[in-house]
Length: 436
Ligand SMILES: *[C@@H]1O[C@H](CO)[C@@H](O)[C@H](O)[C@H]1NC(C)=O
Ligand SMILES: *[C@@H]1O[C@H](CO)[C@@H](O)[C@H](O)[C@H]1NC(C)=O
Image (cartoon, rainbow, N blue to C red; front, side):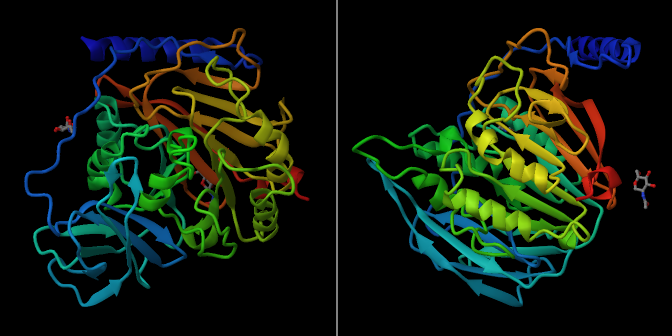
């Protein structure tokens, strides 16, 4: 029944799209959503505890290494044993262990170790802390195009999150990018642990590259003075690796597909104005990108710079004022944001106007968290907004070659991942009109 309704709505949408005159492409989707879903209660596995690794996740470090992060309740060695055949681990790496306290909570032992050099597009099997009860595997990303990113923001840990994760797991992708708001622990630290358990099946198998959202701040005046305590301890990113180390876990960049794609993870919740460390770093990072070699440059940020949803209006404006010209000057191809719990795609924009050399702006804050959807839109829809819909889902960016990337948005439609929006994004480096 629900599936039928979705199909009918989709057919209507396709009809609406195809009957619109080309001058007026702005679409507000008429999709009718299923009901909200409950917050998951993720209890510990019965056999977890002791030195058993839990909450395992991996992230890419430089062109050919991977950081493995995991937690044990008891003291355990920060070692990862790995190799290309299941059960055989000819290689080993030892990293470091840290703990943190937050109010009355004391974290488990948070270990991380960097493994490599690794071969591209290869499955590695690994175990953590010499534990023999759990074997994991990840596939390293390819060192050439094509390269497929999954992008999902504002995930949280509800049944909708689970549905988004199931759809992502069914896709063949190389790396996941998350534009902020991971666990929605919101000060309740055990929920960082349950989030770690929820995402482990995916995050232990493909690199997850994240940046922070407002839910990561977790600062309490006078009591917990240091922001991002849990986030920085649990989700350490490669800010000290690559061609332009940032020195801060709150913003960093890296290359993918052997340098054909440059990914910039910006920080909406740390200083970004001209003269700040992040602004200076971004300038230097962009100056180091050679568009003769780098086909695509994409950026992620939490609070969207373009947004026609009534939720979070204007919250990204200060950062846009500070940084949009830098991205435009470097011909950044696309900017993905979270924060607003809905999907929206803009045309190529610069300075709030359509501009063929501006970035495509996408809001993808629809991973499935417990706050629900942002359903109220500003009317009329701005001309720059091409498609908008308040549903949960995830996006995929398939960079197929040096000129073309296919962007698709997959709505969680009654448990079926439905492609509800798609567009080809062509590299600005390949557009003579945008040459500098
Ligand atoms: C997530 O969804 C799958 C498939 O529907 C189900 O088997 C699994 O139990 C769910 N996980 C949780 C934590 O609810
Ligand atoms: C790149 O991919 C696009 C889309 O599939 C295709 O039209 C184009 O011919 C490709 N370019 C090259 C050089 O293969």
